[in-house]
Image (cartoon, rainbow, N blue to C red; front, side, top):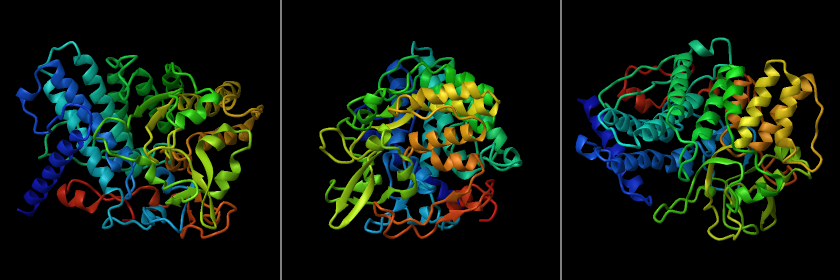
Length: 477
């Protein structure tokens, strides 16, 4: 009986989350209590597809959450940010790696992602009897979003294939492909999970359009994701091939600042528009609140990372800024801070995929194949659009380190750093510096986690295990 009550409770949360989230978008609401009568016309399936996308705006995913989500946790867990002592101490448990199964870190992401996956599966289930002109496209988008959801889950809650020799055989996540709340799926292995992600993305490529309306995936977006997945799997040539299929160019240096102030979409492949009436989210509060001279930061740029930005690197201006509150001065995070007009601080479009990733994936994969010339060429495709006097000419280990450095700089505060450290089998080392702009002030409580530490795999939420006894907990929790 207790188990049934759990399922009813979670089902209620899922349904409530779907309907309330949709009502906040400038689109026709799509009720998750789907019936065959609700999936008939091309418009029905378009609305259902928008319903899947709307899940991404949830705070636990890309909307910005005080509990942590896709937008911030990969940096909060890593070494790019320092907790600001004068902030609200949001995500402090996550930042200090003090989580356990019972504290359920990232439980919101876990639940909301499976809700999004359920939406995708519902559309796919009813699409079997649909023959509208848009069938190929909406099916492709549903599969791509299902793959993205599972990729985000497995990146947090399991090992990454290149992380260790036993990674592929270790527990991955439950890969759900049916719209059935009664199932109790077990965790597949990491290798099996990634194979299914690849299959969904490859299937999506068969129907995804080269162009799509803003805020929706295109072939470039799916190929960027596929390149990332193959990179995580250590399948270097396949990562290169997928990245080479991306047609979007890396943003020009003159447009980089504008990308983060929403005056340009140069180099941006997939983003979430926060402008539709009723979509009341301000993702920038993830990092700080108020203005330049009255800033209350949640997190600031870690002093070691700030020192890595050269003065002629446009990303120093695009990603960071000098702010203060009274006598306290900060290296503040500019990504998501405000648009060019300065109105509505924190209300900035969310960038999920950018063309620079394809080039940096190629650089890393080519280096791992021993093709240093091709690796430098791909790396320089980014560097020449970031520096006035870009570094160049590295070989051997110096080239590898240059690729990793550019990846860190390019995607700082952008949902990647923790996963990169995991897959490279590197520790998290924060350096002991404080939250003020000269490195003084109060440092984060916890400074290091070693390679192989259990904290690199977050615990499966205990509530999920109570609900589904087929799930097994990660080692050490």
